[in-house]
Length: 316
Image (tube, rainbow, N blue to C red; front, side, top):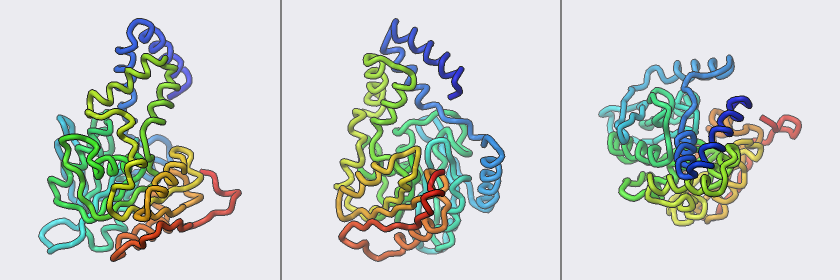
């Protein structure tokens, strides 16, 4: 948010919460859920987006209904071609499948059927609104439409949404039923996001509490119930965590929390690739392909350095 716009927004919330902390909290939640424009900004982003769109040009496209909104899905290797593995791919906040095309194409090259999901408010889905419950319902809609997944792979927010789904945190939403999971640069809990957002808007305690109360009203769960890192010990399936220690958007502490949850977790460091380049880095793609091809995961958790760049090049 630009400095001038942020100051104006802070002023508005200052006035609003002095009158009604509840209304200020509800307005803050709507702002929290507003997604960035799907149009890429800057020449680098435009080039990456155009390249991704071209790579997915031959994919089938579907629209899925999600609580009065829409999610868009690409399908590669679909159709009546006999039983094959089926993978689901989800993206991060403000992203979309065009930016994850290298990962999607790598998975398709293994012969698997690949479903690549644009959440509401992202990619080709349209709209400018998303929250965790909508993302989890979009995942359920994808499984209802295409069938059970052998593995699910998610980046950032998309990985957290897969964990929320797999752990059945949302009542009355069918959990995703994959045998294996891959999380790339994904957070392990949501409280820090709401805390940082409230601090940015300079919300007072009453308005901050009202903001967090909206989560319970919409999802039926308290914000602390979304601590998937704490609950991941009960996930009961092989889980590969890929993270960069130089990730400036999601702290590496989240990866360590996942890794500490049990021997079903394998932690692989992808240092030097930050939060976004990690999605298409060659060593990362190779690690994911190897993990999905395994018969069984080793019982002891491993920390495997994928690729270490020299220290002077470690920043994004």
